[in-house]
Length: 369
Image (tube, rainbow, N blue to C red):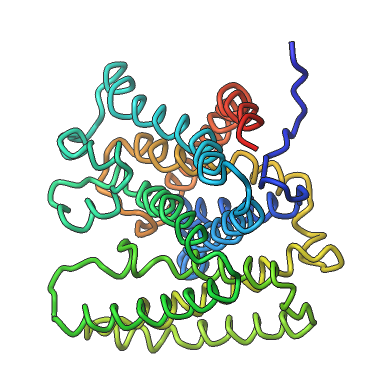
């Protein structure tokens, strides 16, 4: 019987040294997401939505780094997709089976699941972010948080081919810069068409991949050894954070008019800010690196995938199907008890999932190196 080390070590990348601080950064991301989704203190929740974008930046950074380091290997594509499937698919598909078929037969959901059962093919194909945009009627928000999983899977599907065909870091950087400019232009164009009830700001691939692009850009820059690791990075981060904070009143003014301020300004600024934080995290001499190496942060980072999947359905079920929307409900005494209970249950489920289920598949990654 194999000995289980706790906390067990994530396999962060192929051919790269393991950095516990990046697990700690994942832990920070999931804690921000949980705060925004199921605690929702009014003032703090204005900012904790960036937890999702932090996941995106981390994914872009780590995945692009893996691709750059392994792009000359013989089985480049097979190994990459094999490792991604083992990390992502088992828990994802297990959660769909449990949430769509098993749990509803154990007890009756306090809401109608017809929407998700009717459109379940979108989830199995991992394009559910597009489902929530094109067919929102009947959605009760039970699995809305899965939109990020779909977006990341689409990134995993496409990014290896970009690296495979472009190859050189300089050309990849040029491609990323052109892509970012194109995306901003596309957002302005969609806004100019005056689409009503078109939820493109939050869920569409072309409006929420800023973090993935920023993380990828950072990985390429570090691969080229051209990124100047100076104290100015932290100053730039503070500057960007200040712009975002000061821009909130402007957002409230422009948003009712339909101007895509969030999609064209806030998301790109946040992506750059978080990429700087990731860069500080991988610097062994930085205080950010030391802070994120705390044991409890690493623990949350290692169970973050399962915790992300389970936290919202658990909360919704504890809410007995009351009409709630992610991050937009009132906060009262009973709400606090429910939120704490949902968080504890989700942590237990995610821990069991990681130790008892995910680790088995993670060990199989050794066959794709």
